[in-house]
Length: 422
Image 1 (tube, one colour):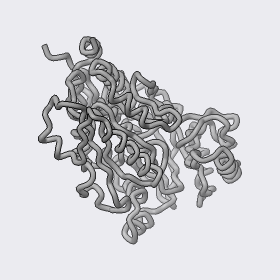
Image 2: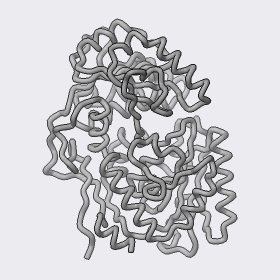
Image 3: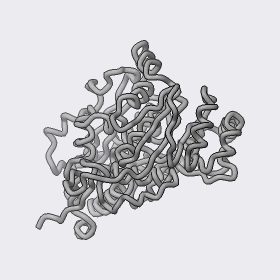
Image 4: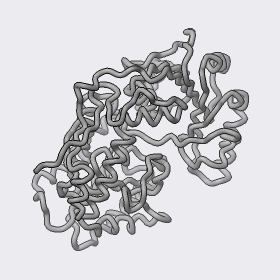
């Protein structure tokens, strides 16, 4: 039985603080050189800082430029990038400052040339190894992808001669001109920036207890932005399919879960599509699960519907897995955590999302618990802050020798498995 299998692997998950792990030797001096507006810049820096690394960041956009743009017209990406300047564990290298020697320098390559190539070159000479982070969009047609890659290669050719490997932000890892003669590595993905930035949200996402074997009342959950139009159509089509199922109880607001029986008749679907994508106060809207409630709602769910939005990957996949939720997705390899169809996720083939949804509805409780165990193990090995930092150190060519299995890299980031209840 799946319950017995769950007990043998782990029946209880605690993501919490271990007082014995409140000190770690920094695992490396990392330099980060960012050129464009990209939320992943903040997430990479923050993840490494949480891992105990000494993180030094040169951002070509000043804090005033980022915050000024946010004030004149809301831009979530610029807001998240501006957080680089106010994080305690991130050291900013100013425009006129001398960049420090580092073990590894990760510099961004993409559509925009660096404003200060001489400064970047000087820093590269002080680095033990140099790795490029390719943020060129690579999710279009083959011809457009190739054209963009060639353009990026031309812009950064001189710098690429001194580059050991390339980390790709999206798309495939093969046939990338920027990585010719070098190893191409997937970037993976992250939680939403707010869950690393705000302590109450961090605690809710990473430090709450839940149990693998307990049945959950919601079979499939979706909550989030409905744009672009391709996602809106996909969500509407999936919702129409679900509503036609006679065994489905369809909810359109998370507060309805309060009145839901813990073992409801039928299979409950929670489906919330947020409008107004540019609303700067989106987290206060009534048509979305607010960030403070989102991890708790996930802990009541078996599967999460994770459609692509403005890019194929979505933070929803990572957040779901951290709460033991099995993602329904179409690009498992992009997350670089070893997702396998029918084992730790439900993979959409050839755009047939309704078939993946049908599979999720038809799984037995034993199957769900078995898959939840797999998801839980992946989260422990790759997704909590300590594990995420280890993975990034490996991508950067640094052996995380200071890490031990299951050990936190700073207080509050430990992932423990406790014994099952008798």
